[in-house]
Image (cartoon, rainbow, N blue to C red; front, side, top):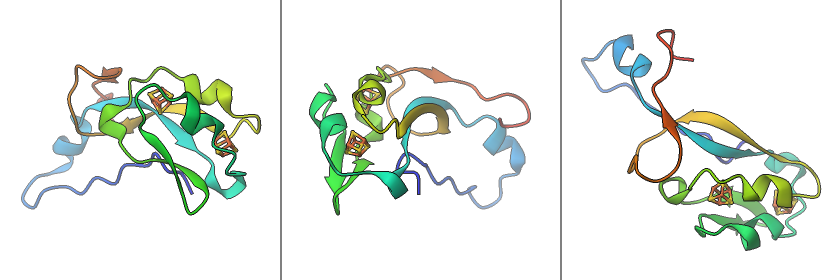
Length: 104
Ligand code: SF4
Ligand code: SF4
C-alpha cells in the first residue's frame, strides 16, 4: 500500500481531458507493507506532514509537503521514493507540474 497515493475521481459530466490537466505534485510514496514504524521519516519532516498511523508511516498532510525529499534519505529500509502524484492544494508549496497529454 502506498500512503502518498491520491485518489482522484472525475467530476460528473467531465471527460478524460480533466484528468489529463490535473496538476501533479512531487510527493513521497511510502511502501507501508515493509514499514518498521521507526518514525525516522516522521522526525525529519520539516513540514510535519508525516505521521505514524497504526505504526505505519503515512503522508497525512500532502498539501503541506515541500517536496524536499528529506524523508527519503531518512528511511534505513529505503521504503520511500519521490513520485509525481495527482494532487490538490496550494501550488506555492512543493514542486508541481502539469501532466503530459496522456495523463502520465
Ligand atoms: S518530502 Fe519533505 S516535506 Fe514532504 S513528507 Fe518528505 S520530508 Fe516531509
Ligand atoms: S523511516 Fe522507513 S521504516 Fe521508519 S517509519 Fe519511516 S518509512 Fe517506516
